[in-house]
Length: 482
Image 1 (tube, rainbow, N blue to C red):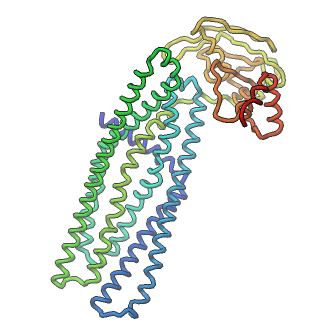
Image 2: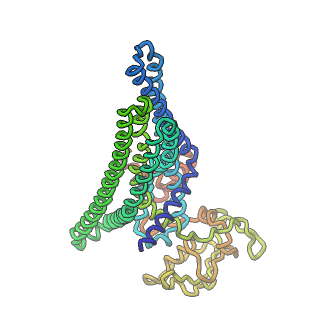
Image 3: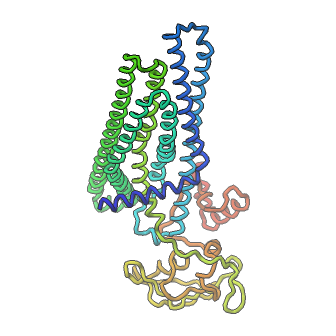
């Protein structure tokens, strides 16, 4: 089971890494800025060590060290500029990935259609598009830049330390791997906890939204208190999962800080004894002491941001699951497909079509049969009513005509052309569907009537006004505020 969990985590992280291509430029800029901070820190340490050494041992006066002192404010400004640039680039990278991933996920959900998503709670889908996408931001803004900087800055510091003190460099090389080693060991258990935490959040979101949508029914059956207790229990479970993740995160930070502190102390002890015995120049020893915390700083930062990686993997698990759902075969872009009589499929807006069902059968994934060899023909302009008991297949017929579902066998013809061979986008643009429970969007009346059309277009506004007049809704709309 643990192996399966790790395999799933690797799969999710591979998906997250694949998304960084959308923001490769700002990510590279953030990494370059982080490396620039490391180089500036090295230069700052060299300047400070040279000033202190000159004043203490070479009896230098203020006039002697004045040129070097003037460089320090410039170094400080450069460091601040690199930090600012890195933060801005990292934020931009995360924003780009979030925007593109959210658009990709929404497009994928729209392509799946309502039938394939009917088994998933609405709250789960909403949480995946909102909370899950937001939770992956630190992965791109913090963890990925820190992982690259960790491989570059310590190496640059080692290049400076080796000529000054090979013993301290050896301590760096021996102790540095301990931090990522314990980070990975602790992180293995935390990954599973983080995944459980996000699973709990998605379940709670879905359950809460479903409960709110069914609130009238719950009140009618006097079951609202029971549902509130169920939501409270789920929230308490999510709280416990969150506290477990935070507990492990704090413990991992404590372990990483402990190893970094002990390593710096070892370097300080070795340098102190050799300075005492006169085996080492003060400049070299002081320079290494200044660089020792900076050597471990990227490793400690990576450990601090490792929790962001675990949280992103837990949050993205549902995204990967949704993106793995199979989208129906795209309709062939044949808006001008030839009909059986040699003519072209004309737009419904131009004239009413003839719709024919030929031996249409629909079998759902669970084995239920929605339609069984249905045959009927609708003449152009004819109005019909589908009558039957609940479950007879009325909604299935409408779903087939809307293109959200494909027949298991048989075919649907529009003016003699199979619906499967037509451009489904053009077909949907020429038809309208009013469901049993219409949805009013949180927008103006004009936006709700115009839907996807541009409501600020004068022609669209005129058509929407005419539609409201024909629906006898003008008086109601005029009475509304604003």
